[in-house]
Length: 507
Image (cartoon, rainbow, N blue to C red; front, side):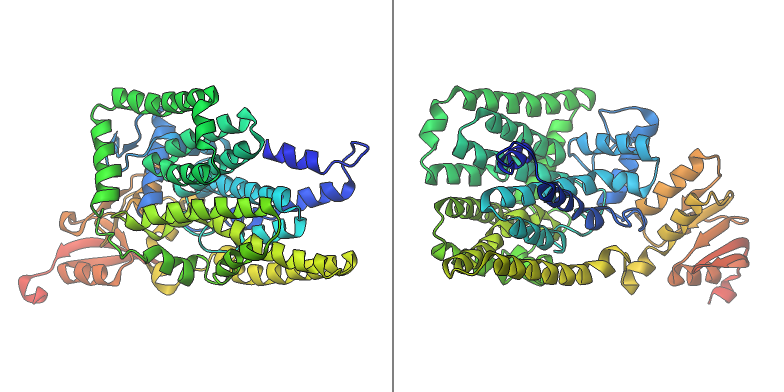
């Protein structure tokens, strides 16, 4: 709908779309492709959340049990989020096969759509294609969005960000043009945000209420029948899902209360307690590291901007940014990727600074050709800088030494799985007591008929063929057993356990 509005506003008097506009639109659609999809499947599955989703999706893909995500064949009580993202990943597997790209495709697609939404919003309301492209560059070269746990891995946060921002934008459009379709789109989008990541999909509601209050629209909303119909649709979609899930998985609702309310907002989960300014520090030092100064410049620019509607956009962005930031900052559990939905609103505020520059150029009667040249130079310079910082992280998929070492076995299993290397008879040992980023690949090998398994050190038996990579685990193995080395490749070692060493030898 927003795309349609944008196209409609760019029609020439003869109701024909200009070639320039088509070229601009094509560039806008293409800009996010590289940061979202390039080398998407290169890195092996990451431990913790992505690996958990990978197991859920793969088991659902094979079992066709679509209501209850499972882990090792049992209902997964570790993650209580709705299964909609898992459904999307299963559909992606059916389309692209069982691989890393397929698992990450829904997150990458959500990020791509989010970027398109942000750029179209800026193009439509700031009346500047150059500022829209600048907004896209800022968004897609910042680590707040283009990183693991968000756009580049099979996690909930990118789809959450897209549907949350879509809901907010549709709400803003509705308050300004009073077309009910945008209200209903907002309600559907909030429901989808909840379907993506549970209660996190509701975190922008206080911000939207605050903006409606500041605009004097609450009374009008309360009098409209569309308000109640939209809320009813939202409740049916959300409550309906949770009740159905609880019917298929008894006790699910109590798990949600414990996981998403108590552990997230009241008591730190798994030791993730941080100070109040955790997200502000993360924004400055990592998420918006190269552009953070543009945010205060954008906020100050609001004072000098004469366009009242741009001031509305700025107020709306401040409400969304401030409200969401406050909620996640006072919450008990803090993780650096939880702030991902904030970055589009940061970009909207940064766009105010560039809009002010454009206003100053117009007021000083700078010729159109010169203005365009200045704006083009800005876009090219910012784009070149953004690409230079994005390239090592995305195109080269660089890992630091510690990360590369940690994923040594996962990388080996990934390659073996892709090349159908027969590793039958091997047991894979790791010092990591929880290694779903390994067992995801082992499950696929088992499904292909290979006799492989994971094993812990205390369960090793004579005649086992063991594959491992960690130096400390090798030392323990060689201290306890006489062995025959079977393989040594890519920092992976394989041994056959021949016999136990004597107690004297151990000493």
